[in-house]
Structure formats: C-alpha cells, structure tokens
Amino acid sequence: MAFVTRQFIRSLSSSAALHAAIKHVTIIGGGLMGAGIAQVAASTGHSVVLVDTSEDILKKSAKGIESSLKRVAKKKFAEKPEDGEAFIQKILKNISTSTDAASVVQGTDLVVEAIVENLKVKQDLFGALDKAAPEHTIFASNTSSLPIADIASSTARLDRFGGLHFFNPVPMMKLVEVIKAPGTSQQTFDSLLEFSKALGKHPVSCKDTPGFIVNRLLVPYMLEAVRLHERGHGSKEDIDVAMKLGAGYPMGPFELLDYVGLDTSKFIIDGWHEKDPDNPLFAPSPLLNKLVAEGKLGKKTDVAVSSFI
Ligand SMILES: CCCCCCC[C@H](O)CC(=O)SCCNC(=O)CCNC(=O)[C@H](O)C(C)(C)COP(=O)([O-])OP(=O)([O-])OC[C@H]1O[C@@H](n2cnc3c(N)ncnc32)[C@H](O)[C@@H]1OP(=O)([O-])[O-]
Ligand SMILES: NC(=O)c1ccc[n+]([C@@H]2O[C@H](COP(=O)([O-])OP(=O)(O)OC[C@H]3O[C@@H](n4cnc5c(N)ncnc54)[C@H](O)[C@@H]3O)[C@@H](O)[C@H]2O)c1
Image 1 (tube, rainbow, N blue to C red):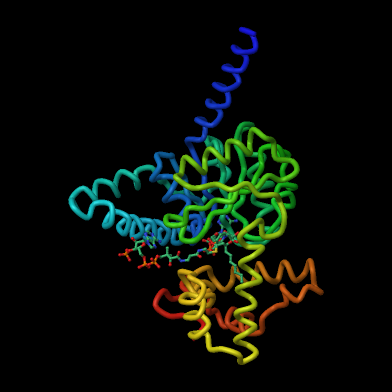
Image 2 (image 1 turned 135 degrees about the vertical axis):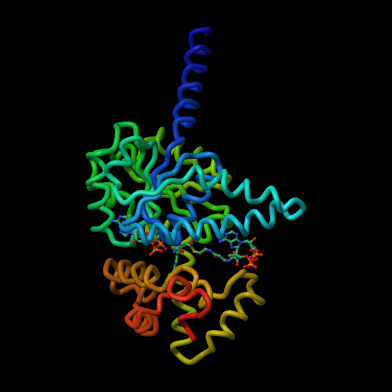
C-alpha cells in the first residue's frame, strides 16, 4: 500500500516536473497568430523566441505585439497608467526574435508553428526542425484545417506532436483546441493541456478530425454567408448586422473573414474542397477567389479598409 502511494506520488511529481518543463517556447511564424501566441506566452512568464523568414517581418510582428500590449496595459492599469510601461517592457524582455529556426530550437521545450496553411510547407519545416531539436521538445501546429497526423508524418516524433489551435485575436480569445492525433502520447497531450492553462486559456480536447470543433462549424457558416450574398439574397452589411444583432455574434461573417485573412480562408476552403470535391459545403467562392487574386486579404492588407467593400 505504502509502495503504491509512494509510486503514485512519484508519478504525480514527475508529471508535474514534465509540465513545469515548458518554459522555453519557440513560435514559428510572426504573422497574425504567431505574434499573438508569442505575446500571450511572454505575458505568462515563458521565455519566447519568435521566428519568421525576414527581419522586416519580425520588426512588424514586434510592433504589433507592442501595440496590442499597450491596449492590454491601458485597460489593466487604467487607474495607474505609469505602471503600464513597466508592465509592457517586462513582457517584451521575454521575447527575442530570429530568422534561424534550426539554431533556436536547440534550447526549446515546445515549438508552436503558425506559418502559412500549406501542408508541404509545414511538413518541410517540421522535418528540418526534427533533426535540430532535442529529444524532449514537443512540436505543435496551430493549423486551422490540416490533419495534425499529416503534418507530423515528416518527423520521427509522432508521440511528441500535437495540435494547439488558438483563436484570433489570441490575447483576447480564451479558447485553445488541444488536438490528440493518433500518435500523440498521453504525456504530450497532458503537457499541451497544462501549457494552455498556463497561458490563461481554456483548453478543450479535440480529435484529429477536419476543422476540429470550431472550424468544422464556423467554416460552413462563413461560406454560406458568402454564398447567400453571391446569390444576391443580402448585402454584406445587412448579413453582418443580422448575425450580430440577431444571433449575438461579436462580428458578422464578412467582418470576421476580413479579420482572419482572406488568403488563409481560401487555403482552408481549397484544401477541404480538394479532399471532398462533391461536398457543397466546401465549394469554392468566386467572390473570395477574386479578392485574393487582387491581393485584397482583409485587415492584414489594410487595417482601415474592408476587402469586401
Ligand atoms: C471561411 C473560412 C474561415 C475560417 C477561419 C478560421 C480561422 C481560425 O482557424 C479560427 C479563428 O480564429 S476564427 C476567429 C475567432 N475570433 C472571433 O470570432 C473574434 C470575434 N470578435 C470578438 O470576439 C471581438 O470583436 C473582439 C474580442 C475581437 C474585440 O472586442 P470588441 O468588444 O468587439 O471591441 P473592441 O472595441 O474592438 O475591443 C475592445 C477591447 O478589447 C481589447 N482588444 C481587442 N483586440 C485586442 C488585441 N488584439 N490585443 C489586445 N487587446 C485587444 C482592447 O482592450 C479593446 O479596447 P481598445 O480601447 O480598443 O484598445
Ligand atoms: N488568421 C486566423 O484567424 C487563424 C486562426 C487560427 C489558426 N490560424 C492558422 O495559423 C497559421 C498562421 O496563420 P496567420 O493568420 O498567422 O498567417 P499570416 O499570414 O498572418 O502569418 C504567417 C507567417 O508565417 C511566416 N512564414 C511562412 N513560412 C514560414 C517558414 N517556413 N518559416 C518561418 N516563417 C514562415 C510568414 O512570413 C508570415 O509572417 C495558419 O496555419 C492558419 O491556418 C489562423
């Protein structure tokens, strides 16, 4: 009995040690999502390296993080604004940047990937990182729509690979979908759940199925809104107002498409359409295709202007 108890306590403390081990995080991709994930990880005391392909992009990411932190500080230190600047600087100190993923992962506990929604590009990245990262390092993808198992297949660490699907804007959205692929070990899954909680998020457990939970429901809804408009059955403005005032959504579907990025939305739809061409829910949208071809990608192209106008 005493032995069982000691063993039980040992297993609890080793699992606590494992969870505590996620201190150093590498975020690959400094766009909308990567910058937000880096900000939240740094704000919760993690040491963060943010990686992208060029110094210019990383400068833009750093600027975005700083202005988001200013918004947080304005609210948090409304009574004592002078403390806000120290708060921001303390968090920024936890973030460094790099264009060399292979060298920075050598000292990392967790890699969170938030690069372009393309299977081959993600596989190439993880295949290269697998050779450079230490044994214990966990890999996670923030993919919106791709199977985690397919991304993980370019590595030899299927047991230490899972999904961490954050929501935009990351500093505000409480949910993280934690995805257990068939190869993900229970220990890795538990670490990812613990990490999500350490970020102050609310994790939900997901299977490695298309769109997990949120996007399996959200993507058909958003596409249906675009199709409703394409059929001439409602203006974009009326559809947005209707869903905000009639269904209680904080943003209408067109506003949200602008916010998410029209390029990312198109990558998601094209990928699902290719896999399931007869499914009318995932039929491509001529309007979306036209806007992306014109380089109108939503807020990321111009924060002040809607791409749908
Ligand atoms: C077709 C296929 C498409 C599928 C796409 C799937 C994509 C993906 O996989 C899943 C998703 O993410 S799906 C997408 C999931 N996401 C959704 O569905 C999002 C839906 N939208 C919302 O929940 C709300 O509109 C927001 C929370 C964005 C803003 O809140 P609001 O009440 O409408 O109003 P507000 O006046 O603007 O802001 C008020 C205050 O909030 C604070 N603050 C805001 N942003 C901040 C930031 N970045 N940093 C820091 N702080 C930030 C700030 O304090 C600000 O005050 P300030 O004085 O202005 O600084
Ligand atoms: N936009 C959203 O609302 C949202 C929400 C949840 C999940 N996601 C997912 O997160 C991922 C990123 O989306 P995003 O909206 O942040 O995209 P984004 O276009 O804003 O940013 C992607 C960044 O990745 C960089 N990048 C591309 N290839 C790279 C590589 N090989 N190495 C390093 N950096 C590279 C790009 O330079 C860019 O800065 C996608 O998988 C997307 O599906 C997006």
